[in-house]
Image 1: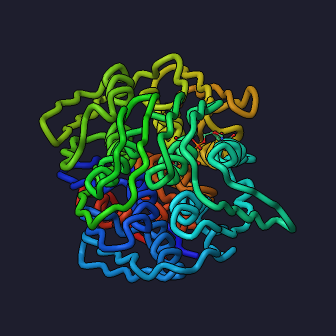
Image 2: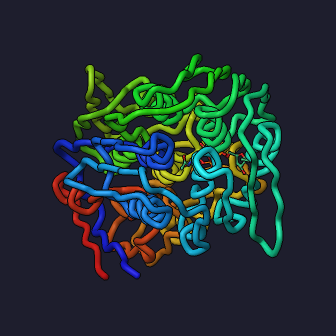
Image 3: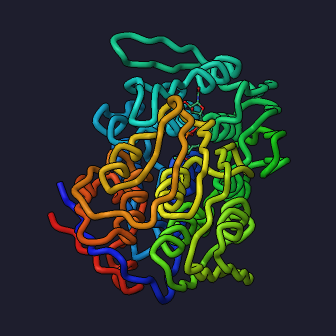
Amino acid sequence: MGEYVITGSKKLKGTITVNGSKNAVLPILAASLLNGSLSVLENCPDISDTKTAVEILQHIGCAVERENKTMIVNSSSACNTEIPTELVKKMRSSIIFTGPLLSRAKKVKLTYPGGCELGKRPIDIHLSAFKKMGVNITEENDIITFSCEKLKGCDIAFDFPSVGATENIILAAVLAEGVTNLSNCAREPEIADMCRYLVKAGAKIDGIGSSDITITGVKKLHPATHSIVPDRIEAGTYMIMTAAAGGKVLLKNTVSHHLKPLIEILSKMGCKIQLSTSSISIKAPSVLENVPFIQTLPYPGIPTDLQPQLTALSAVSKGMCRFDETIFESRTAHIGELLKLGADISLKSGTEFVVNGVTRLKGNEVFAKDLRGGAALITAGLCADGTTIIKNSCHVERGYENIVENLLNLGANITLKN
Ligand code: UD1
C-alpha cells in the first residue's frame, strides 16, 4: 500500500490541465457495449477506476486499446453475461454495466454491490426501474440475476434522482422496444455527457441534462467518436487545495458553469476567481473566512464529492461552518483523520457536523479511507506545519491521475512511497 508524504506550508503556483471526468468515462465505457462496434473515446483519464472498467469490458469479450488519452473499444464480440465478483467489489459502480448488458444479451449476473465507506448504498431504484421495463430479478447467495425476453419502454418516475440509476435505465432504454419516459432524473453533467455519446452513436434522447428524459428505442447503434467532458470534481479539488495552501493556480480544460456552487463558496471565503471559456484561475486570500453553512445536494447543488475537501478547507478558515451531507448516510470517515491533524470538528449526527476553523494544522500520520476523503487529507497536509503521511494512496489513485506530479509542478513538497 502506497503512502503520500507531504511537507506542508508551501504555496501553490502554476498551471494544471484537468483530465476527462471519471464519472463520465465509466458509464460511457459501459455504453460502448451497445453499438456492437467501435467507440473512440478521447480525453479518458488514466486512473485505476478506468482500468477496472476496461477489465470488465475485456471480461465481457470486448477488445480495448489505449493510446495516450484515447481509448478504442470494439464491442462486436461481447458475449459474457457475468461480471466477476472481484471487479464489482473493486468498483461499486460496476452496476452500470447491467443496463447495456441486458440490452445486448438479455441476461446479467453479478454480486450484490453492497455497502461501502459511504454507507449502505442500496440499488433499489435501479431494480424497481428494471422491473418496470420487463426484467425478472432473482437474488440468491448475494448473486443477482437479471433476465428478460426483451426490454420494454415505459414511464418511470425515480423516487430520488440517483445518478447511477438514471444512467443505467437510459442505457437499457436506448435499444428497448418503444418509448421510455423518465422523470425526476439526476441532472449531473456526466449523465448529459453519456447521453451526448449515445446520440452520436444513433440513440434518440430528448431532454438531455434535464429532470425529464425521453428515450425512443432504436433498432441499432453505429460507431461513434466522443471526447469525455472535463472532470469538475478534479478541478474543484485543485481549486480547494490552492485555497487551503495559498498561492495562485490556473486550471485549463474546465467547464466553469459545472462548478458554479463551489465558485460561489470559494469567492465568499475570500478567493479571487477569474473565469474564461475553458479555464479557471484562482488566487487564495491571506486569510480565509468560513461560510456559515454548506449543504450537499444533487446537481446543480454543492457536490457531495467535494464535501470532504471542503471540510479540510473549512478546518483552516476563520470562524465556523456547519455541514449537512444530504446525499450519503455516512460520508464522514475523513473527519477522524482531520482531527489527528489538529482540526476542530464536532459530529452532530451521521450527516451533520460543525467545523471551527483553527489557525494551523500540524502534520501527523493519517489514513485515507475513501477516494475523496483521501483528497481531503492531501488538502490538509498541503497546509499543515511539518510532515503529514497519508496511508492507503490506492483510494486516491482511483480518481486522480498524476496527482503527485501535478502538485510537484505547482511547488508542493509531496512524494508517493510504495
Ligand atoms: C454517483 C457518483 C459518485 C457521486 C454520486 C452522487 C459515479 C461513478 N459515481 O454515484 O461519485 O458521489 O453519484 O453524486 O458516477 N440510492 C438508493 N438507491 C439506489 C441508488 C441510490 O438509495 O438504487 C442512494 C445512495 O445510497 C446514495 C444516494 O442515493 O445515498 C445517491 O446515490 P447515486 O446518485 O445513485 O450515486 P452513484 O450513482 O452511486
